[in-house]
Image (cartoon, rainbow, N blue to C red; front, top):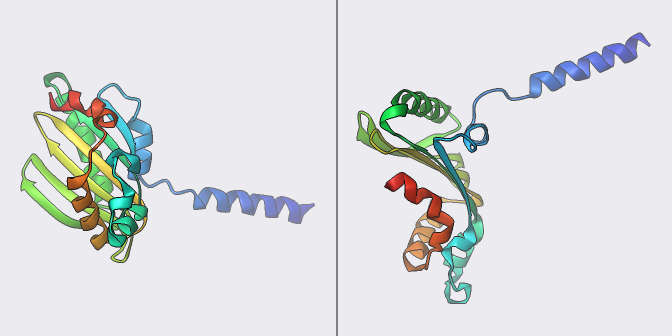
Length: 178
């Protein structure tokens, strides 16, 4: 009986320890996608609206590595500047986690953008684009996939230029741009 109680207590302790309580972008998206100042959009690969028969083998392979895109945007107004600063600081803190490897950063001060990724150079699980501007707000874009690599991303960018993007899926973002 004592060993059974001890075993159950040990399992419960290990379960609690193994729960990851550190902040992540996924948790941030889930916590904020319903809040009034946020706009959340999930975009599938069919947004590209592309004839797959016309793709080269390299383009088809790159497109196959792309699963979906999650977009979370915060619309800044004169009335919510304090909340904007708080939320932007939270995202910056999450992106400072070593698991997010920064590829590029542009801008300075209060306006700018960064591109980071999760994974290895040859097996990228997630690309993250974070752009912010004090007057408009910020947006975090998570590009999720399997076995993505920098070449795939560049190829997808070239496919994007030729695609007929389904703007209906991006309609909620228009209010952020206004």
